[in-house]
Image (tube, rainbow, N blue to C red; front, side, top):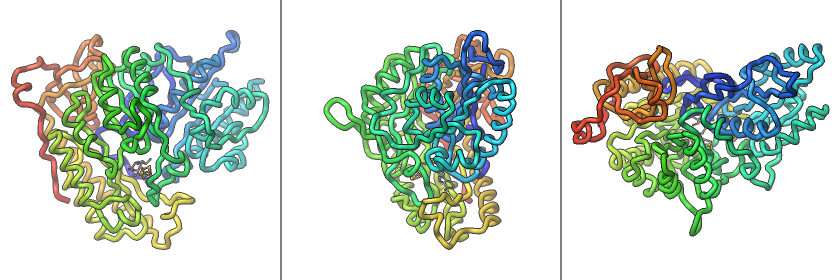
Length: 512
Ligand code: SAM
Ligand code: SF4
């Protein structure tokens, strides 16, 4: 996997517990403060409280799922622990998108085995569960390779967790990777008000799961299954609960979020219609959605970017490659021109729109000419940032069986060149922010005393000296300089000039 060359930060595995712990951004890296009151790592046998440690890998869907698992297990008396040491139940919520992501899980399981053995010597039983897409893809194989694992459960089965954990505590080894008929969202517990408050002022809400697109490199349609959309009233109720507990920004998420087609009053609703409805939730200041497929950016959704002030002018729209030949063999269902046309229409709807993307380099058969087209599209769009990955063959996907795999050395070299190009664009985008005044939603204290960190409309972290009472508020901040991973600024007064000047327009295009 390539180093994400993004201001929005790196893509680490996240531990969903611990005072002030950070989980992360749009791609699972949005900074979220988690449960300040959560348990430390010392066991608490006297009170009978059981401790739960969840480690979340991969995308924002997993961050959301981990929180819902935590909320569901809280009903059973589990409290979060910030480390696996001392926990009675350890859940690894895994990602299977690239080989490296899956391998990380097995090395972590090796470490957990030693921890479990040490606990057994003290007379303590530790239950180890593997959830998420590795669980779905590898099932029983996980228990064969890592005997310390008690429970393997796929992403559609999290609502069964309390029952499965109880069985595992009694000594069973369980693999549950069916796609059940019942809707897991009907059975997963909502977050308590306290848990929501502790997680911060921004939140994800899953509106759609699974994917019907079958890009030839991707495991998602196999691990997450067919597209399913949650009904409108449940999403709205969840957003209302979150906002009532202090959340100010909601990101609607899905593997293919703009393919949303949920049941609402009068029939099936699109994502655009859902956005208009969620924007009406009183107290909600900001709305985002991720991740979108270029082929599903319909007219209404583009119009929403013009009309809905709560909808932030930033979009993650993965293109994967700039070469039509590669896009076709990837089964992306769009050409380079289709993609650029969508970008253009979005810019017309909202001139200050900022874009980010995912890229895959070294897809089977990719020539230097194909790769040059990818480099070129980065400059053409003028991305504010992007993630780039070396193609990783995933068992069971069509591209993995192709004979024209690209040499590892070539992938490494192309990835470095692509990242340099992305870095240049990102630096230009950030430099273009200096001297401008943006609304910033303050999220949490910064590193320095008296400093707060928030997000610009374009999802950049912004650091400014500001009183803690502003956490949860949107305030204008004038950007004074850029840092390695964030912008720095000063609180500004709302000014007539800003109102007249309107949103900033960025000129960030750089040629490859
Ligand atoms: N649904 C989104 C879309 O259509 O672009 C992407 C979701 S996927 C979970 C996240 C990213 O992982 C993809 O955009 C792609 O760049 C990357 N990815 C997926 N499969 C990959 C593979 N086999 N090798 C390398 N990167 C991969
Ligand atoms: Fe995977 Fe996205 Fe393609 Fe679906 S649209 S198969 S999630 S890359």
